[in-house]
Length: 388
Image (cartoon, one colour):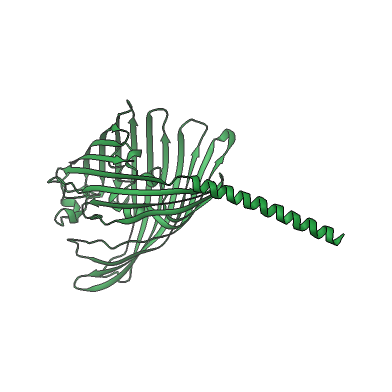
C-alpha cells in the first residue's frame, strides 16, 4: 500500500506539473504572439500674447511650444503588461529639448478589483492629469491651467513608486474606479534666469495619494475626488551667498464632475492646495503658510468627425486669505476649435482672455512683480499634432 500511495502521489505531481507546464507554455505563447504596441506624437505650436509674456516670450510671438514622444508597450501573458515613454519638449524656459524617460511601468492585473503598477507611474489627480500628455484626447491646446499647470508638468505628471488600482461593479449603485499610490518624484534643478535666489537642490522624499471615481447609474457620468500629500525639500542660495534650507509640506485635493453623453463633454473641478513653508533661517527666508483655490468649468461638443469647438472658464487664487489686487487672482476665459484633419493629424486654434496676473511668471517679464504687470491681457495659440 505504501508503494501504491507513493506512486499515486508521484503521478499526481507529474500530472500537475504537466498541466502547469502547458499553462505556462500557453501563456508564454500568448505573450510571444502579443504585438509590441508603438505609438508616438510630434506637436508644434505658436504662442502670441498681449501685455504679458506667458509660458514663453510670447508677446513677440514664440514657437517655443513643441513636444514629441514615443511609447512602447507589450502584454506578457494575459495579466502582465509593461510599457515606457520617451518624451522631450520646449516650452519657454522649460525642457529645452532634453529627452527623458517620461514614464515606465509593469502592470499586473490580478482581477478587476485589484491590480498593481510599479515604476514611474502617472499620478491620478483629477480627471485629466494622467492624460495631459495625450494631445489627441483633448479639445484644448492648454487644459485649464488653474488645475493642470503645464509649466509644472515635470513633477505633476508621474511618481516613482507603486500604485494599487481596481474597478468594482456596484450593481444598481453603478461602479467605482479607485487608485492609491506612494513613492517619490525626482526633480532636476532648472535654470532660474533673473531670480535673486539660486536653487541648489530640490528633492521630494515622499508623495502619497489616491483617486476615487464613482460612475453612478447614469450613462457617462463620473463623480470623483483626489488627494495627494507630499513634501518638497530645497537648498537655496540667498545673496550675498547665504545658504538656507526649506521644507514645503503640501496637501492637494480636487473634487471632480464629468458628464459625457454622445458627442457632448461637460466637466467641472474644484481644488485647494495647502502649502506650508518652513525655513532653516526665517530671518533670511521667511516662513509662510498659504492655501490656493483653483477651479474651472468646461464644455465641448463634437459637431462632426472633424470639428469640435469648446470653451472653459478657469479661476486661480494663489492665497485664499488675500483676494485683492491683480496679482492675487487670474481669470481665464478660453475658447477653442479642434480640427481633425485626418486620423493622424489634428489642428487646434485657441484664444484666452485673462484678467489678473497670479499665474504670470515675473522672470519672463524682466523681473517685474506681478502687481505691476498688465491686466486684462490675451493669449492666442495654434497647435498642430501628428500622432500614430
